[in-house]
Figure 1: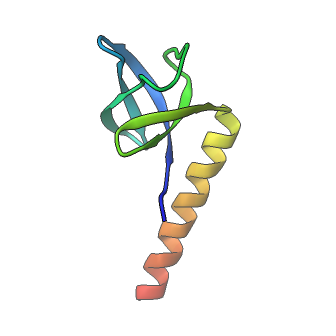
Figure 2: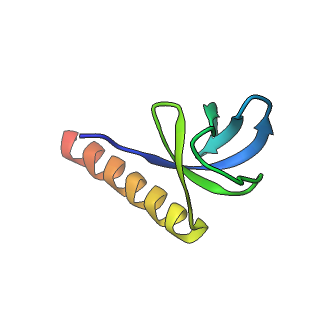
Length: 78
């Protein structure tokens, strides 16, 4: 199973690269597969590549769901 995660573009870099933020963690990713991205846009990332631009509301909701899954996983281990 593959999982892509929403991330917010913090800075566009040279050579089709960008700096993104996921819950305060910064990563450098390739944006070569997606056209016309700007700082503040949300993208789905998988293995270091932006796969698609997504709606900010959907991105935030997905991140909330991932946090809930993480919390539920921690509760199951307790």
